[in-house]
Length: 163
Image (cartoon, one colour):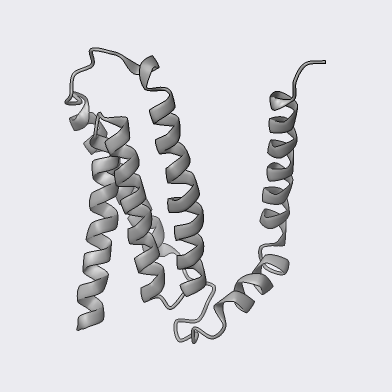
């Protein structure tokens, strides 16, 4: 019963923060809501006994990505002087689209079958992640690796001083 309550609290934090993130007109507040949503996801990972993923979620997403976004917002604050309304007037259209997308995804999820057995014990999650990277998900892993290398080379070329 306690785990169910904790799950509901973590889910509410994650979904509530995500909803506030996309509806807020203040970029700084949106970045803070995004960090709170990432923390909620880390809490859900802990409930799933995936402590390694929770630590990675906190270090990379909350520690690096959210901090980078907040820093970028603070540096570029002078560029964002505008007279936009504080309330988005297009929310009914977005709500209908979101509900439609949710319905489609729920239908697809109800039809899909999990490749893993439901009674799979948690075991050593780090070893299972590593094994999945080099067996089941080797192609997506290599594509992501190549994209990261290309992005890093591109960043070096852009940041390099002209000679």
